[in-house]
Image (tube, rainbow over all chains, first blue to last red; front, side, top):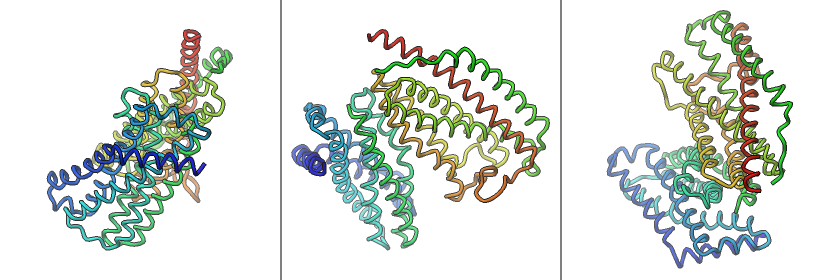
Length: 220
Length: 233
């Protein structure tokens, strides 16, 4: 099983290297949002406690939606999805492999977007290690729900609009926890950063287990 | 697809009985709420909105838990009746979540001074409302019966996690919304006995109303499913 999951994830990484439009779109989207916010609300407001972290997580969530949708569109365009599903254990491997691959892409988006925010908004981070852990946990906690919703809406007309409508409300706990964890890490409040990071981890584990249990039955 | 006939006894006998019981229950609850229960010592008459607001919120929880159970039932057995129960319960749940939000807002204006405030219970309830509107939207965009049921079942299972979040949000976070008064941890209900009795009658009346609406809606949905299956055959 693990071999098949890694195969799907590896295949996804190779496809991203050859045709990086999804990843590039997600990174550009993140950069545009960071720049626009600073311009619209002004650098002083953008630097206020909680504003930059909130923007970071909302932007990362939309970047996850863009990346996941592009990934599955590529599968549909090449009729590659049917081939993977035909393999023994293909549905489980497809879901878990996509989770791994999209988490990898999101890590790149989060790294670049986070660095842009740190530089453009001149943010001083008191606990950089805690910030990195919170970001890493968030990167792993967003894809289970996003991929689930992309899978459910795969062959529907209005899927571009439907995925955010379905995913955003469910991911509210991760967004709140992520924003608070990063805010606490920037401010140097270690216990708060740890507590919120643990909440991201808990929701990530719950949704991953739930996704692995029920999503394979929903893949068409 | 497996077919199951919706038992006639439910529509012929139980549904009319539930209709009568819920109407009587609603009349009794209204009389108790307006004439028998005392006004709140601090909030005065406006507190009586609680007798609509709390049962509405309770029904929202109940309806979404039923959506979850019916969704598990569909994925487990693929019996269309489970899908019919899920959609019926989701629609009623959305209706009563909306009613809870509106009644809460009407209560908030004279009590808090605003129609809406950004506090955890309100936000999580609004999020739950949007989540199940999304569930119904997903259903409306799917044409194939089996696929629609499967897609909706997955969302119905995932979305139920929001129910405990809504309920516990007032204890987890600093909230303006009052803490649980009846179902509170480690203590008896902190409420006047007549208020509690009125609230219980209200909850029972709303639950009967839910059962009636659910049966009626499931009956319609089963007829629709049968028609679609006949057309496909």
